[in-house]
Amino acid sequence: MILQPTNPEPARILFLFSDTGGGHRSAAEAIIEALQIQYGDAIQTEMVDIFKQYAPKPFDLLPELYPIMVRVPQAWGWGYYISNDSRRAKLIADSAWPLVRQNIRKLVKSHPSDLIVSVHPIANAPILRALGERRPPFITVVTDLVTTHAFWYHRRVDLCIVPTEEARQRAFLCGLREDQVMVIGLPVAQRFCQPPADKPTLRQKLGWPQDRPILLLVGGGEGMGPIERVALNIDRFPLPVFLVVVCGRNQKLKHSLESRQWKQMVKIYGFVKDMPDFMQAADILITKAGPGTITEAINASLPMLLYSRLPGQEDGNVSYVVSRGAGFWTPTDESLTRALHNWLENPESYQQAVQACKRIARPTAAMDIARIIFERLPTKPIVKPPLQT
Image 1 (tube, rainbow, N blue to C red):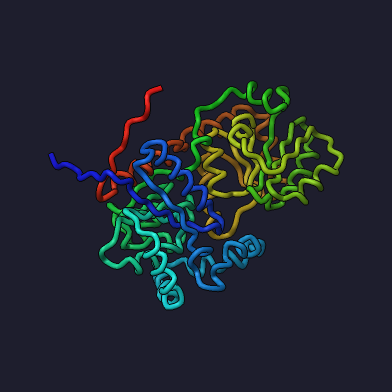
Image 2: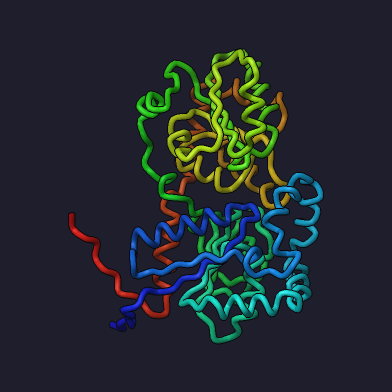
């Protein structure tokens, strides 16, 4: 038996991310949480925002500009698809290298690590180039479900972890070998990975009614998207429902909705921290096609109606949900009304969607990824057993 060398010092793992959509931060935090649960003080993690902390001007402004850019979705989608080719992606990365070389080399020098995890597609090429040949293991965790950009797939990565079989096939098209790619799922926080709770108990805790379907309408932490239009459409729905609207940090939207007179029973929230309870207590989620929210809903066995998607990386999310039977694409008032009628008047159809969510759920993804990362460490840190209580 070959013994793995151990190290009394904690292993240093560097996470590369940026707050430019796609749930990059939340994916990194979910993996870090899973590492801490399983390995405690044996692991020392650090998160670096590659744009905010190390990109030269004006690229350091991208996290602030991203919400503005995606408000012009057709232009965003055009840029996404025009660059989504292995050769074009390499050309762009090579062209940008002289501009970012000094900053990226500073990043690598300032953050020595035993293993690097990238959860952002733009990080891969420049970091791997700056590291050179003698480098720590480099793992990419893809945070887009299906329509994945060529930037995600760099041939020099040691391992590329993807959420779906579609993403795995895309990796092969971009030149990765079979031994470089693993389908594990999308990592989300452990609070979104718990066994199903008792709906009546949760509804009582939240002050929600027990006698009508609960529709949960969300638009992400920033409350983006046509939430007000969707809410008004549901208010005209002929069957009695209880509509929960989560506006996130969008105070203007919250005040606008609170000032209206509603025919249906409606509860309006701002930013909430107990979204797992909301999802467990609801019957139907109405959301944009973000990968994190979709994964969280699937883990909660919560069927979805998708009212919008960002052209490019979210196109495949819609087909993923619809083709698996976990929800419908409802970008218009008519399609949303039709889907609601289908589920609320046909319990068998609704239960089929619930079962579809259960079939495709991967609630252990973050914990599995954490174990893979630990196994890839060149030198294993000594893991102390948990204290007995």
